[in-house]
Length: 215
Ligand code: ITT
Image (cartoon, rainbow, N blue to C red; front, side):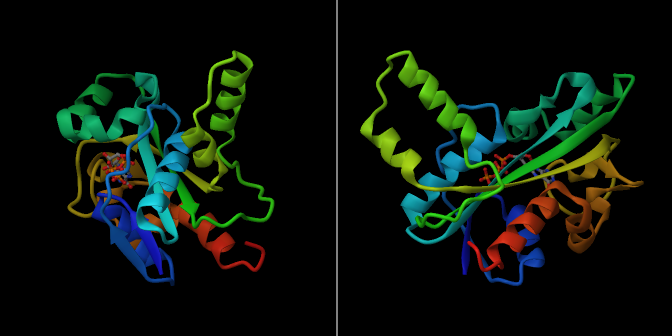
């Protein structure tokens, strides 16, 4: 059994549909580290979630980027969905010449065990930042050292698309305004969305690794 630590039931529904394994939603709003890259947020979220739950966990940090808006809303996707709403995001994109964008998801797995060497990045950005902080002579707290010692495995998925006027009733979040190959995510079944979406791609990598003997 895998605990998906998230406040977003839409993410869990997609993971349940994709993975053969039972997936339980564990509602814990893990503290999001102030960082602009999804991998750092997901890795630290997974450690915090694992410490809280004490069992194997996955977390997912995701976001929408709109090319003509310099990658907005990116790391602020959740905040922007709440405060502006998806209709307003569509209006901002519509005013531009180009409506291209992408969705990205980084799933992070942590079970407190150490893993075999892995081709995926293992929170390298943060380790790099810590090394840089050390070199500047800035203290690293014991808690940070403990935190960094818990291995996390990251799986990233990216899906290109186009921002369009809202269509469709399915899914969640920005699904109605994100179109891929003529259909918005909200017009697809969960299975169809998983086959091409950012989260589906991340789940595919996770499933391959999770089911393999060398983890
Ligand atoms: P947790 O952090 O608790 O998992 P959240 O919904 O706040 O839940 P994020 O911090 O990862 O998740 O924020 C991602 C934002 O992007 C949020 O507004 C989501 O609704 C949206 N989002 C992520 N994946 C999406 C998808 O597949 N379709 C539509 N919107 C999505």
